[in-house]
Length: 307
Image (cartoon, one colour):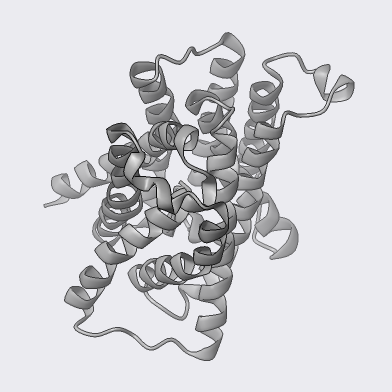
């Protein structure tokens, strides 16, 4: 039984890593709000019956929980995915995966600075390593560019992913004190899809969906059912079976999977600077999660997909 759960814990971050590759395909053909609306409408249709089957009813959230769910949906669904798919229009899946992998270090830093969560020495080293790795990746190893030119628009969008997911993760910690993780995920997806309706209509791309090529639809199906549905269920089941601390270690596989799949499927190149940045970010992610094993936060309980 435990072996099956370890397989699921292995597959979950691999599916999340593949989401960046699928997102790169979709971002070329569809605007960000339209993509996100289709994605979370589909995953809502998938998760609602799963929640009802497992709980036997739909939990009724308190007023506090409802406010938290709206906040989660706005940051983790609407804003995060807008930044993600906007960034993927110009930034490769390989490079974007390294930048986004910097997120857990930012979550740990913000939690320590503003919520008095203890930052132990190795965690601090992990945050520093991840920060240096992200800087090397964004500048392609030419650190002097930080002072000589502005970041690209794509880089700014991906940094927006990092900060919106940080807010989402910290808010999720409080939401999961009120509701179970699967309930938070399901309700957040439904609310997010509703919030996205006016933005998707404004983009005007919904009327042209019939003309989209097959690879766009395949990628959308993967983004919704695979990365935002099955992957989360696998991860939750893994947490229940082996604990959040052991499960968090598997998150190191996500950027590795994204880099590997980007090179394999999209024929993207891995430059020396991005490779070095990836090593530092993934190493920092490992150190950050290792130090949080005794006190896992929402980042090790609720992922996204962001991914």
